[in-house]
Length: 112
Image (cartoon, rainbow, N blue to C red):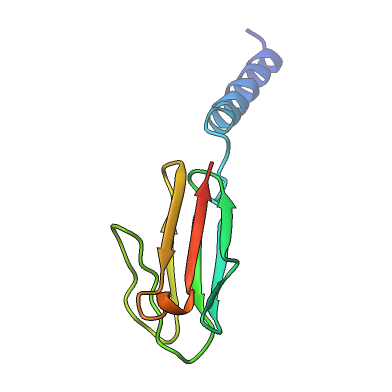
């Protein structure tokens, strides 16, 4: 085999070793993260629609203690900071701040 052919074959082999796995796995894409703000005794937005596999981060933006409580999980009660969950199943997930739920501090995540 000539040097030209050998070089060409080596180049094609190297390119396929790099490009085929990237195409098969969709490249290195990060999951989308959505934000819900806790402020003035409300979750903003109150309802958020996302896709399965995406994350939601709740951000505390006032100086009042709140929490984010689902049926089976919850954040700690805090005045500042954040709390993040990745949603791996489709469905509607209602949540609330147990301290201020009576004042209407409730939210909903809809996952498709």
